[in-house]
Image (cartoon, rainbow, N blue to C red):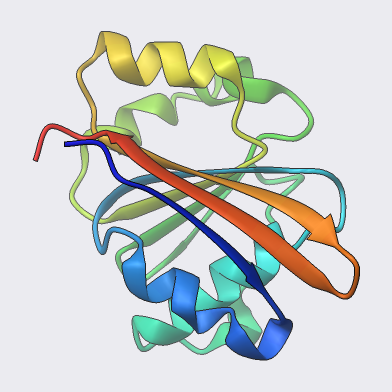
Length: 140
């Protein structure tokens, strides 16, 4: 069953999004520069008992791992960077995989391999953010 949610939230309300997101599997984050993707990752990590201060955008390393959370940033090379660095295979591992700058190629790859994922689109909305959460790509 497809589930789609929309929220317009301030920074102090961001935990509302983290509460409805999957606790394991793959979350794809899409949004412009400075839209709040890494801020959302920090909030998710905090809800998983991880010190949010150690979470930062892995733009140059592509991936960082915090406990059972895998944090990817594919801004520079897109999904091809995941493939050429052998990181796509991580998506088959247990844990929570969060991808900043997800692209259509990655979505197609995940569908091809029948991997469940959730898409979160983030837009700047004044001093708040609009979050569109789409869980349409889950089998459960």
